[in-house]
Image (cartoon, rainbow, N blue to C red; front, side, top):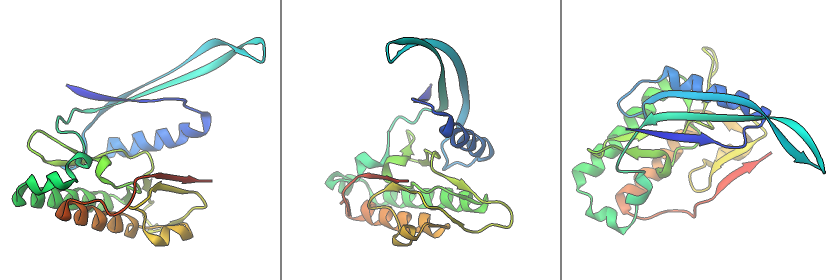
Length: 197
């Protein structure tokens, strides 16, 4: 079985980001990173009505194919019910996330949207880091970048990201929040995605 993620409304400006995500996924192979199986890309001409006229538009469709992970995201386990998770399971989940994140950072990749919804669990509750849509891969001599675009999920964003600085520290901050939530069974913050241009 596999999971398929359909990217809707592919605008030309998103094409580069999509290609970066696919390139990143093709280079990572680790037991705690979701396994990328492949992708499908298609652009077709379609007649559309625009301001009362029929125009021909390019319609882009992109599908990303991943291994299927039957236990869903860690998100659903961070509630008072997480007290029902055995300590060993909590420990293995935390350890797996740490190992996967360490692997990404060794590959010079900053995830930038690490949160429980982007950590999937297999049938043995082994965590797999997923969703690399916002990730940034650094070149060999880079260790940080500056951006004017703020993006990510509230509650998991490091305060220094408001200055636009991207480093591995952003992921470490998110990891700390996730570990706290796993151990307490409570969310620290409200859930909301942030995208400022």
